[in-house]
Amino acid sequence: MLRLFFALPCPAEIARQIDAWRQPQHLDGRLVPVANLHVTLAFLGHLPESRLPLLRQLPQQLPLSELAFDLQLDRLDCWHGGLLHLAPSQLPAELMALAGGLRQLLDTAGLPGDGRAYRPHLTLARESSRPQVPTPLSVRWRAEELVLYQSEQGGYLPLASWPLG
Image 1 (cartoon, rainbow, N blue to C red):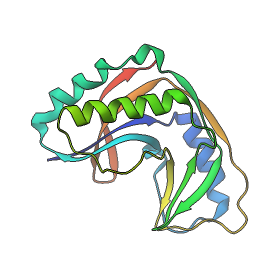
Image 2: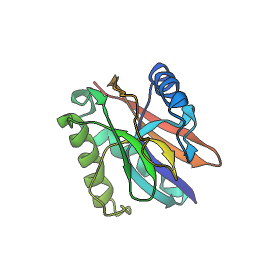
Image 3: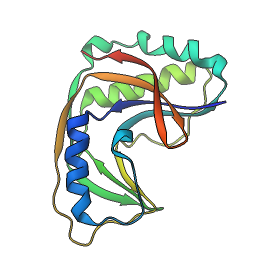
Image 4: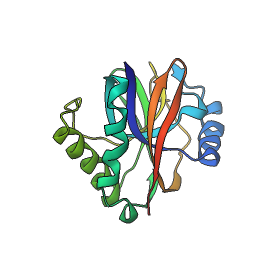
């Protein structure tokens, strides 16, 4: 069984900016490693390896050439349970179309979903809390790639990718 998810990878230069901001904040909890920063589009959970060929075909059914967009993460929040994250204050229509399209394809293929409404975010730390007086942060990048990841001990392994735009 593989633990899988579709996501937008955080570009290395943006990940370094986030980490440079995060260090002096003295965040509590478990920081997400810089190499693991991403925005999940669809979490698949544990699936047998035999489902990988299907998962590699599904994104090709989406209008990926029309779905490149600028993603700005400018809102710091912490959900109940201690998931400290950055989120967009304005949701790009392309982001919601990409996440919704993936969810629809996965549902049609009979693959499990978590049943929750999609709330795009980039996790900064787990088992954390919001800093009392955080320094504002806003990062922006052009989302140009969709990636299928496998979650492994301590990291994420890209299994397939598709260009956006």
